[in-house]
Amino acid sequence: MLSGLVDVPTLLELCLAGWVVYGLLTALYNIYFHPLRQFPGPLAARASNGWKLYMEVFRQESPAHLLQKLHQQYGDVVRIRPNELHFSSATAYHDIYNPSARWDKDRVQYESVGADHSMVSLIPYEAAKQRKAVLKSLFSRRAVLNLQGLVRRKVDHLVQVLQQRNEEGKSSDLLMAFRCMALDAATDFCFGTSLDALDVPDFRAPLLVAMDAALPGFAVMKHFPLLRKVALHLPPWLIGAIYPDLVGLPRTQQMLRQQVSNVITHPEILKAKPHPTVYHRLLDPEAQNTNVASREAVLFDEANTLMFEATHTVADPTMFGLFHILSNPVLYERLLDEIRTVWPDASAAPRLEVLETLPLLTATIKESLRMAPGIASPLFRVTPAEGAVIDGQAVPAGATVGMSIYHVHHNGALFANPEHFDPDRWLHGGGDDNEKGAASLDQWFVAFSRGPRSCPGSNLAWCEMYILLSTMLRTFDLRLDRTTANDLAWRDCLVPYFTGRHLHAWCLPSKE
Ligand code: HEM
Image (cartoon, rainbow, N blue to C red; front, side, top):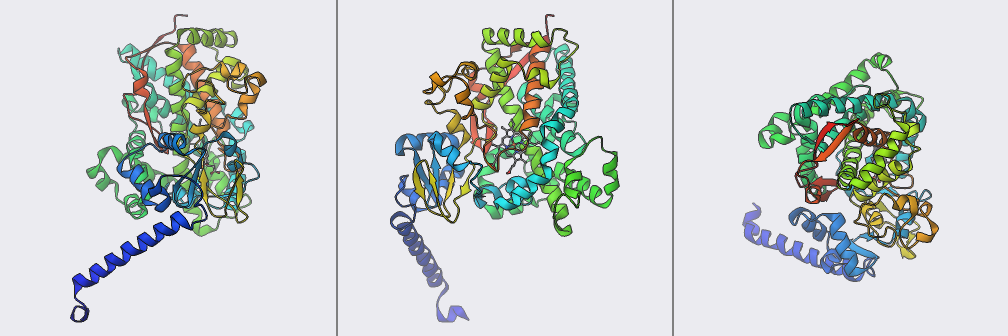
């Protein structure tokens, strides 16, 4: 009927023309009248959200690295979408990620995780605060000290696998090996059931292979929410047919759904767990006020995201640090000497509290976390109703603002020669504040972020890194297997995506 009044091509042309005019008017508004109009940035970024999409999805740029170039060109603040600012001066970091800044997270970034009920994706500050309070005791220092034996067992298991491989004449991909260890430790710690990734040959646990394969697609999922929703609901057989490397993801999620459904239907099974888990806390009616209808979604989303939050973040910096230790025989020897002072008998490993007293080991872990970010992308927040002052500049309410941890940790004024792996900087200082000594550097150690949304898992992460790194150095005579710095190249896909061959090493028996 309509085609009798207006012909269809004309209608389409009208729609298209309307869309173009709307786009142009929006671009003009964004450039000349938007509350953020005074902030510099590429013209296309100031005009439209499309610039960031184009850079991340079509040009496959690494945001953390691209932003470095933009700051060189535009200064300490860059407008990267009409309503979004990225900062680079170190003081801006503490303005944004500040204990008193009760700002919400940015919806676009955090909904892309696809787990809206998890702590990390809860947008409002208040909701996250409540959830954090519920889970806090699980991740406390006391809880971690009590469960350090669990981490020790996972690391010992890794040692056995590496010894076995060495006897078979094989070197090992230590990035994947460390990820298996971290996944097993986290799943045992959080759910009381390990995924046993270390038992899969060649460290090719399907979930870890899938997590890695999914990283380059993260930007697409962020910018195309509809596609994300469809992808998250595809059955495993179809995903396996389209992209076999990804199949571990839906399979593990199926397993998690079953686990969650079991604990909800039969909460008594939790009594058999060897220690309190995420499920105990989330199902404790006194601990939180989650309504029954969303209980299943909360448990599933929390379990699902914890596996991601606790695996690459621990393994990747440890791998990075180990590469630099193995590339520097003097540092390797100094670390070994220090570790032997508290670990003279190789068969009697010291407790975490003892390892923590070793200055060079501690400095090396910090330097590893500085060099390789657990999370690379800027973590965006939204300024509150009263607006904010960031790095001395007034930012209006409702603006999306953020700063990548990578930019703090690679700031040459804070960390002299920032691309150089130098644990000693944490012992003696090093940067424009050098005369104030090493202690002044600690304020710029932000690997776990700062403020109300900082990492609740940092105690567990430190525990794993201390035990893992010291054990690798004390147990093996490690030799690089044709690995060069090029093999450690990475692209920012929220977490680093290592594009090279990974760190491969021979794990020979220690000479004593
Ligand atoms: C070296 C290892 C780790 C690093 C570098 C790291 C880093 C971070 C960072 C930077 C954030 C802030 C994210 C944001 O602002 O959205 C974060 C959040 C989080 N991390 Fe970690 N993390 C590590 C290990 C862990 C572990 C082992 C767990 C749990 C077992 C964990 C659980 C979480 C959770 C639940 C959040 C969300 C907190 C919130 O949004 O309020 N992380 N982590």
